[in-house]
Length: 249
Image (cartoon, rainbow, N blue to C red):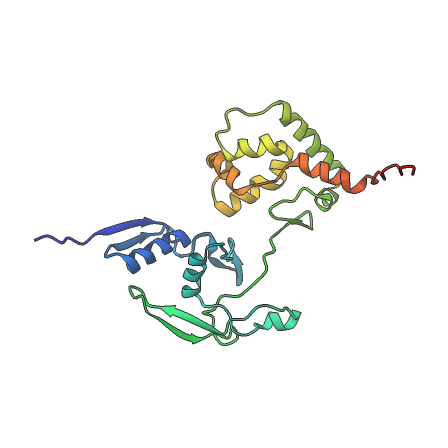
């Protein structure tokens, strides 16, 4: 009789690959085998040590509207039960957990433990508000990029003018069909803004050229961002409100 056990081959030891392997071990009899090209696990969520400096390649934030997903993460890393040092230094008020639940792989039984103190253990998940920014031209820009007054003020008149002309040109010279993320960005923001913000940042974070990523990725990641809406909103903010003409009684 041959070996009837099943094996799953997983490419990449990032969050998705590690989660898939965990779920296979937890809920099936399939043995997962993960192949990772680099010497590290964690994918774009890993922290690298560069010349003594610890740098986060991508986001280490985990959030979802699904209670099942959040319970899954809390089982991996329990929420903090006491303020961390930076919480105390800046006076940050955050919700603290009172206890954590830990479930062993392959078991439906959970055990209750006191919520961990981040000053005593590294095995803890912090409760943090989300703030992402791009440091460009020695100034901070919102990320995802917000096309508001602050963004254009930081860019300056000359650069903003070039972006405006490039955007106008893209309106009359749409790339069809959109085959790549590069086409998606240029069609919506123009070549100048694409090269200013989107191209280098996207390729550094994801490690893939924008010309090799599908346009569908842009539709999923860049929602509700529109130069037309931003300009309209800016005009409404600076233009004086027209008071209705008082009616005669």
